[in-house]
Length: 345
Image (cartoon, rainbow, N blue to C red):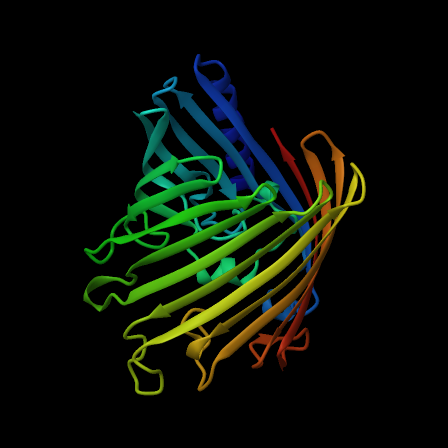
């Protein structure tokens, strides 16, 4: 509790400080939840209950049309409790280079990975949890340099050179690079074609990892949003003991839909699946492919301007007994529920 209070005090002070400085803007959000895992076993130290999941303050100093400096400071539930307030989701400088009537935006520092369908922050989601693709198949944040350019209303491009997946400091004396091509073939449909590749491990044993990801968003009507993602990855020299082939990979996908019945109530549904060769990404070694899947249902309610809540019911399953039930016995299924409230400012 003491660490949470320190974190909140620090974040509130950062917001107040920013608002007093000319040219500095502050935004962010608060995210709290009640989480229940039907498999939780108190004898193993697993408990259900309330939690302050995340508090974020985003500070940005404008340089006019030339660019800006930004830092996203967070308290994250589950972070090292002795270092919780020192978590920086993003921190970067951006400079805009004019090219004819366009602008090349160059970002230097740590930034959210421009890949995949689902976004990181809870205020940008329609449900409490992330899909298997987000959890196992993609990086979250990248540190390095990125360029972005919008060529027209239909085409834009991200390209980057970074340390690696979620590495603030380089760990293998090699670089990872990738990009995302955004295409809008018609007004209500957007496509993203992404790729990221490079050695991903420490020291001389770094393994080449390659990922191709395709995401699609369809604003069918003002009330109905549909989305999907296909994620295909591989890792060279994944096997070391003869049981895992030298090259192994994975394939995952998700489909989701959100419907707003009116200005207050909505409903989200999502199905996800992730097939992992020999558990190289999910971390569960086996003599065959690991297959995870989940069905998620989440009614949503808008409580007012910038404030909302949702109730998520999620049913996970696997082709092996990878979880423990409430009695401590191995099981291939798990059901969780979460009530979440978010407020953005």
